[in-house]
Structures are given as structure tokens and as C-alpha cells.
Amino acid sequence: MTLELLSALAVFAFVSSITPGPNNLMLMASGANFGFRRTIPHMLGVGLGFVFMVLLVGAGLVQVFDAYPVSHTILKGASVLYLLWLAWKIAHAAPSDASSNTGTPMTFLQAAAFQWVNPKAWTMALTAVTVYTPDTSVWAIAIVAAVFGAINLPAVSSWTLLGQQMARILTNPARLTAFNWSMAVLLVASLYPVLFP
Image (cartoon, rainbow, N blue to C red; front, side):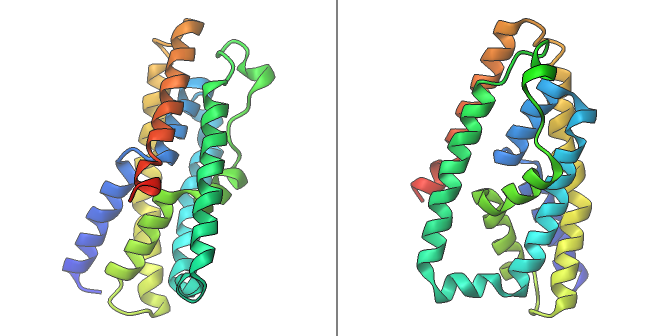
């Protein structure tokens, strides 16, 4: 992989990882509701789950979609339903004084599994593998996954920090409820490009 291609990949990884999407909105909400430390498994699940996804997509999972186009439609439908359910959970998250009793942040495995129904993650993985790999060798795919691993985790962690800082102004249950509902609405709005390409 040339230095120019590697640089372009790094820019793509940063921009696609730092911009709003389902992962980042959920991490911001988790940071606001549970704090940075309790959200670490969620952040690691996003970062490492996405790296694993890139490796599998690069190893040939994209060929399944080419051979069986209906599988892509089924995955898209499941993704939309799951994101709507997550938006509902965010909107109805307990205020911070009650969250320790009634709410829990997403676990590592839940966050890693979420990558497989996250439309933005699929777009990022497919683009990275098809545009930024000079060939389909294991080495090229491993480089793409490693670049995302190095860039994605710090980028998504910044959203958790933002949410944690916002928690300082969300001490009022009404403000926290309004924030959670705003995050839920933004999460649903992030489905627009999926539903209306």
C-alpha cells in the first residue's frame, strides 16, 4: 500500500469515525447517562467490533451479498428495526440519579454485535475494503483494519467525553429527558439515508 493511499485511508477513517452516526450518538448518550468509565466496554465493543467487521467483510462477506442480494435487504430491515428499538431505549433512559438501579450501559459484546446491524458501519467497512485496498490480499485487508483500529477508538471516545461533559448541565431530570429524546430523534434521523437512498 502506497503512502498516498494509506494517508487517504487515514483521512477516510477519521472523518467517517468522528462524524455523527448511530455509534457516536449512543456513546454520547451513554457518556451523559453513565459516565466515561462505565461506557468503556461500549467504546471497546465499537472499536474492536468494527475492526473484526472490516476483516470479515474483506475476507469475502461482500460476496455473499453479491450472490444473494435478498440477504442485504433482510439485513437492512433488521438494522432499521434494531435502531428504532435502541432509539426507544435511549428516549426512555432513566435520569442519572436512578440509572444505577434501572439502566445499564451497552456491554462490549452488545456493542460489537451492534456493528453488524449498523448501516453506517456497513457503509464504512464496504467503502474501506473496496476503495482503499489495492488488492484483496490478507495483508492489505489487515492494514485497513489496523488503520481503523488506531483511529476509530479515539474518535468514538471523544463522543463519550462530550456526553460526560454534557452531564454537568443535565443534572435536572427534565433536561436529561430532553437530551435523551433529542439523541433518540437524531438516531432515528440517521436512518434517512438508509431508508431513502
